[in-house]
Length: 118
Image 1 (cartoon, rainbow, N blue to C red):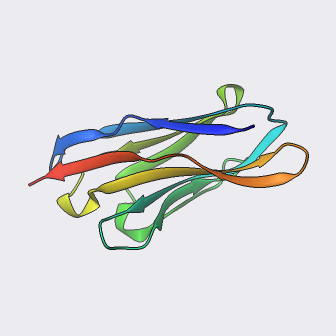
Image 2 (cartoon, rainbow, N blue to C red):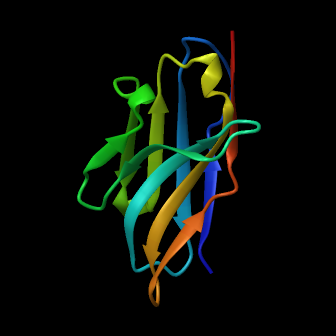
Image 3 (tube, helix red, strand yellow):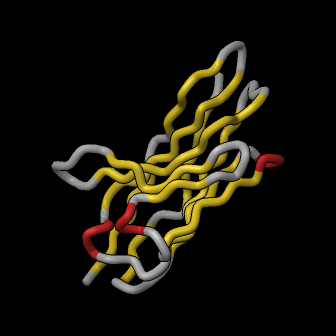
């Protein structure tokens, strides 16, 4: 059984910073893609950033230059450093990983709330 657990969310003022973490545990042979998604109230879940096992990254246009995704393969962990946060970036942030166990499966974390006040 693989489990993803996010942490690091909270309340921050506009212009502030937060660092999210997501740790995968369980019987894991490899982790391919890791990513962060955001879901605001009433909206669909959308991609914020993703990183491949080769270190290639991809960001939503709205966060380029302010957010940085990184990973620690030894600890099965993905991070999202968020700077200069904006109120419209309030929402639940979910991590997603493509993990090799007996096969390749997609896993989601339970989400962590980020609230940016104006």
